[in-house]
Image 1 (cartoon, rainbow, N blue to C red):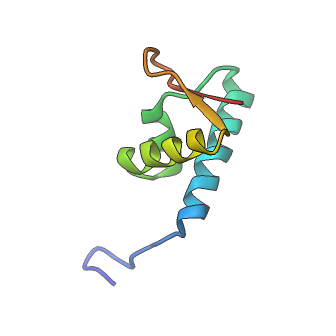
Image 2 (cartoon, rainbow, N blue to C red; image 1 turned 120 degrees about the vertical axis):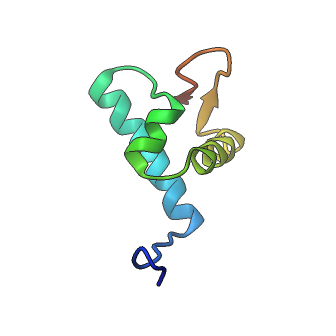
Length: 76
């Protein structure tokens, strides 16, 4: 436990599934791809962690990232 409260950890697969579920939810709600910063905000994960999971999801063929656009990922 830290001075700020208990440490919360998740397994990598759990947080990756959270990112994927958040992408699906965002598209369902807004009809467009979510910005990475918004994924970080809605999941509660650090921006770097979300980016890491997006790279893994891209490698697995689950999402495609388009770095030239503000909304940087889409489901395949």
